[in-house]
Image 1 (cartoon, rainbow, N blue to C red):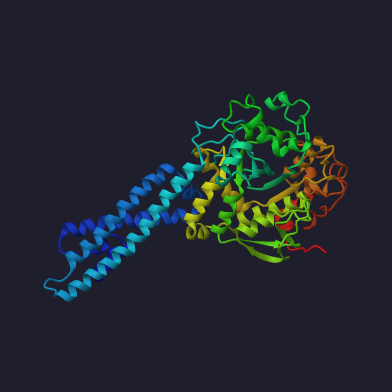
Image 2 (cartoon, rainbow, N blue to C red):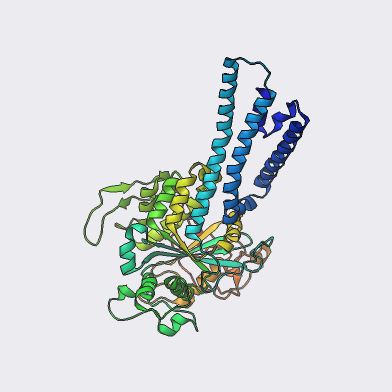
Length: 511
């Protein structure tokens, strides 16, 4: 029985007690192979988790793993049974034989069941990745990042990557409406990521921004030389309608792109921020709610009463509210209302809450959550995402995700009416560019800060020293004041400033 148990713990090791030399050799070889494989996996899991994650997100590896795990389970069960048969004493009576059979069956189930689950997870992951990511040869888009595949640092040639993060209600449940009206991107933000450090700045753009400019020489600039505007209601020409207009009304624009609406919106966001937008991710509302449920919920601070439902313009009062309080644990439905609530509040407050929700999801995603809720997370992810990130780029983004989670902080810039160059009636895009450049610029060394004895020019790409402190609402583009001490950081309640999301999302209830 002990030898049989040994083969269940380390495949084949129990055969070292077999009477025949050939069986001893078989046991030694299989045990050595299993031990080497286990030690290797444990070593990389402890010292190089990004490599393990890259393998776990490689569809070719996962396909092989699905088959390999199934075959491995059969071999392992066979080794357990063989060990028992060749090492049990001769002449056992029926009762002891039956007991041995029960033990072998239990041990076989004990090793086969988790192996079968792992094989199923491999298959589920393959299907989820295949449903979200297209082949690199099948996606045509502008400004794709320079990723060096299979290099020690795939981001060596790309100092920053700028990802357009979009929220829209384009889920399967609205397939007919999407086909008729396309997608309105009511949440628009850019995640600008330093690929070396993982430092991330979220730049949040109001959905009702007017007169979106496009970069000189771009296809959209040629079509809209005076910015994004046209006949009819001005609300039909906000930045959140670029995707739908191009998809439905301008079939001759962006014809070389796989996702025409997305690439058109990328050019618009480039004109607004001054950043080159590399790729996009569209999150569907239904899928994000399911993801949060699959994670077991998220914990956020709620600083003011937030309505669930209701419509201020139509005079419809909400019947439920999220109450203020620190460390509120929210499941998917309530988490989405935390991010979407508009009753008696404005878009700028909502934009700030959305960055807090993203920060909570990033902070609270961990391997334990992934493995204990694997299948619902995989299902939610396949429903949630539309992107031009391709399967050959996924490994590089996994590396970047670990850098963001382990070493980087998240800051945010929220453009609100009258602040940092943004005005609903007359946005100053040049000043908005300056604010963005100041936000993403690396902080200067202490020595550089101490020796700044004269006012500096307004923030530009060539003057990173102006980003030494979070920008304040009172002076987005004026010269920096001479100082020998670090500037005061933005308060946690300053929704318009450049500030770390952790501080901005702290519990600081409204008076």
